[in-house]
Length: 138
Image (cartoon, rainbow, N blue to C red; front, side, top):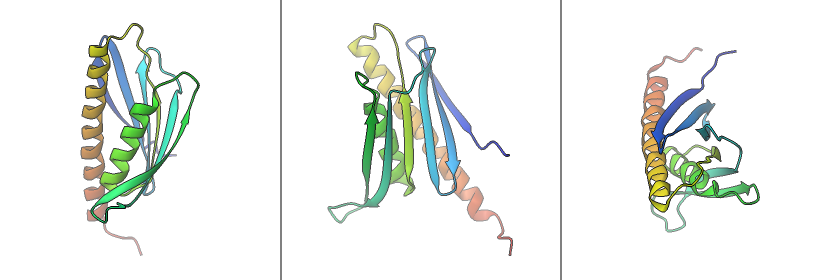
């Protein structure tokens, strides 16, 4: 079995945020967690669709959240951002835990997650271009 899992990471507030990117056919699964302290806090499923405004693309998103966890803010954002940018169905499982995080620390974590999002989009674009260039086997 071929391992297609790709990794993106950022270190913030003394903790590493690790995002595993798993292409699954035309779809994508993301697992983002802190090291140490990773867990399953929330899961978001975003399905791309035409925007209800008639302009551009949007996503319909479903969320599962563990009681007391606020990981859904990151899970929903990443799932929707990747889904709307690529048109693929995207699942994001998130579990980030950093003890005693200040409001400024929360902003720094969210900024790091946006950097991870940008890198994921670059990776997916490169994978799409590579796939588009491969000859078909008939």
